[in-house]
Image (cartoon, rainbow, N blue to C red):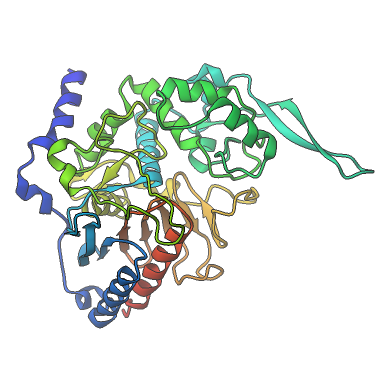
Length: 422
């Protein structure tokens, strides 16, 4: 029976009528929900100027407040090679905007009583039982730094995975010994099976004792593998059954089928700044690994439905994915005084169970509200949810992964914030 339900859920996007692609949230004029039409129009003109400067080929941007969409624009080109214009139903590679799906899926299992946040990860992935940590030793006389391996204490937990305090890192970590070990063992999420990825991660030391530092990492990939072990389904199947199908996210998943491949947003052939060839994840072929931290693709409207579910306390209309208290737990800061060891987390932000969480209205340079939560994808996608303003924003571009993507989305964030007038 369970297998039949999963298969049916996977087929829903393919069986949906064409008209379903425009299915979205209620709409309103900006002034009806306290936003300024002229100021949003100014945002559009500035974005057009950025496109003309070849910052990115095109964009789909959506703003909803108080449950109603007031801004939904497709600008520029969906495919700069063919010249095809951007469309509102364009599909984007989400990269790290996959992570919130994984976090929600894990909390679904918590609500199902199948997982506890303080469970050790090794309960589900035995290879993580006897990990070691690479710690620096400084010679007091010479200042020379060497590294020693010590046993992990305490073990990493599910909570550590969701808030990136597991001690795992990415290959660009500043920890030289761990970085070298990742390269030596071929740690990656692309081109490997989930089991292979976990086996490689288990062979390298952690960069920090679990719970002692925040560093962006493969933690969410590991969380995805835990979900697969607990459910017996692939991560994509579980997403489809418990998140995508219930929320009518008809164009989101780990595979863009041939019938929809023509809607896939494409980058410039070469990055306009570096001149390097742009290579992005091929989401039109079946992936070995449904990587919980990076592998999905989807549309702006699909992601808006996901964000609105979170803003509304775990439900969208009559469909409930999570309980209200669970969403409150996820979107609260879980770092406290845990130090941040990675510059990717902006000043003024902590981290919850899957999202950066704004702790102060001030500190960060972009206007925003305390309690806002957000994240982004390396190839140009981002979102934020502002509970105080009852607003969600989704921004979708597609380009070479890099820091320049942050400049583009932060500019749009500031322009939208400036449109709040009531």
